[in-house]
Length: 343
Ligand code: EPU
Image 1 (cartoon, rainbow, N blue to C red):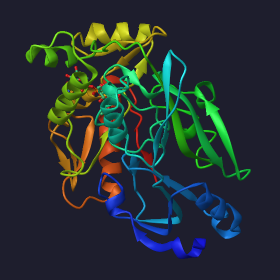
Image 2: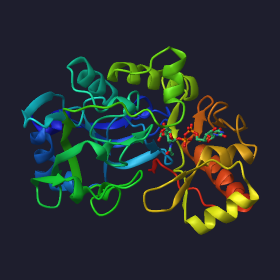
Image 3: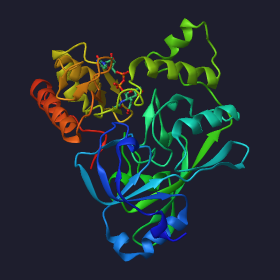
Image 4: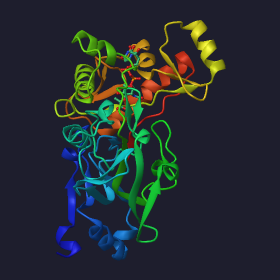
């Protein structure tokens, strides 16, 4: 099959982003393997086009109604046990696999370690971009390496954890390597000695309610799935992109000033001495929870999540986000940074 046989023109992205926003991609190609990327690279007009690398579309706000470039949608599949060095099991997984399906596969096959990140939407290949995380765990904790296609050289490259420069909801793929590297697969190192990590929020409480004191990885996963389902809207039912803003980070001095004024403000100490503040609480305090501007809404159970109340336009979500940022800035002097990429 030549590239032009698989290349599609004027494709609607409505079903390919979890907000369910309609936008048209000028060109669209599904990526099953490296050969597909090599063919794009070898075609000069395609290589020069703006690129949008699409996984599950769960961290994306399509602000423009048309994308004048090429969407490369990652659909490559496969999970394999690469090796076992006695301390850890190394698993290689293709970018196009769904993240949650991969976590379920690890548990079904007896490789615990990723259970706290159960039910995070999106694909495996998108996970390193914003170093996904939940319930006291981040992708970087068990990440070993990844392989990616480099559009500057046309070659494959391998990056380890340090190369990826992971931090809270951030990595090199949002900066220097944005649109340049296309992540093809990831390798995880899951330690063979496993301990549950249930110190965060209501995880231990949820398990205790069920009378579970020493949970298995499956039980931790089930508790986290239950908490997420309780708080977060299912994108299949109501379009959303999970947390819309990052939790802002402040210095210990700034935190002391804020705490004196707002003793009930939820905050989490970080290893570097700084504090992270719950953005959902800030938005809630500004009275936005459950409100709507046009077809763009703020979720009634978690103010950090913006939702599609019908047939929302990307710019309506962007306007709502701006109004929230303005209010939080005016009231608390804190700026909220959006999590999704605006296209
Ligand atoms: N809160 C409110 N009102 C709200 C929402 C939250 O008062 O409307 C308060 C809660 O009562 C709690 C605090 O804010 O005291 C924190 O809320 P929560 O435990 O729900 O966590 P979060 O900080 O809002 C973060 C992640 C989530 C992740 C959870 C659990 C970010 C931006 N979000 O949310 O990630 O699932 O912790 O680890 O860091 C995502 O990125 O899409 C996502 C869902």
